[in-house]
Image (cartoon, rainbow, N blue to C red):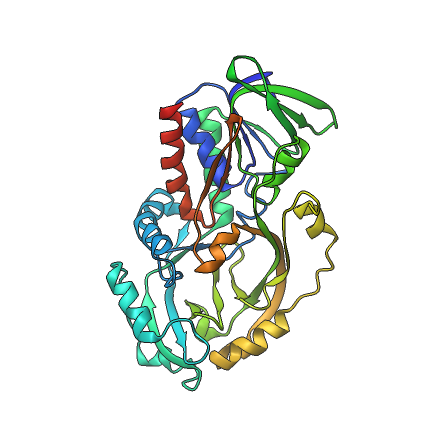
Length: 374
């Protein structure tokens, strides 16, 4: 860290933190990213299904589906060199226990302008007709997290954004002139105060950690320890991605950075969950570090192959584990609203979270309005 004073400090070097740092650099001079890992985009930005959403995942949340439809083409153009469009994506609607029927699913997608059509016969035959009501072909892509990290790092270096790796933020407090002071712990374990006109808390699973250490009220957040299985799928599934909707939900699709497919399941991917409270707060990443990581891949596969029999021959490679943090309100309809929350009494600190990668454009809009009003 070259300076003691910055125009803005971004806590968290994931996708959202990095892109917002570039956004701020176009308006201010001295910008710093503080990242606790040894590189950027190492946690939730990597350990997820790498899906670039196009609305098809959210038939029960109109707003989330519409925002995905708006943001998808923009993301695909801006990050074209990091997007894998080489596969075809299919959504199957289950006959039993689904929260939407096939006709409801098709009607919803038609109303939001999402291109959808019946899957060809050879794909339809991959599914168990006793379990799946209909299969639709859609347009949906995946992103390569490794390429995305390299692309963003080049952009940050070219823009002159300063990056402090292996460095964490411990607390924040008000300072003179409407600025804030952020205490950080560097690689040599020193604690150093930094002065900033704006602090963005983009730490995802650690959003409440800085608040707790600062003696500030916690946000209402839910955390899950999640397992994403990486598998080598049979030849018939190599060039396709599949998601079943909407209840007995599993998904398998290309994971470009490893040349494998991911496999997730609504019942078995989440291993445990909790909500942050003042009396029962747990450090999410420490909880994950000590969690006994016993894979549930066999359970995922056993259930998923009932819908997609050919998946039975998938070969397990490994699992990636991460914290998934959500707003509890999203459980009503499985939506993914963004969090953009200026800290009461300390509005120079803003807490930010997006539930999926294309949310970045919605957050940029919020940040633009916030800066305009400040």
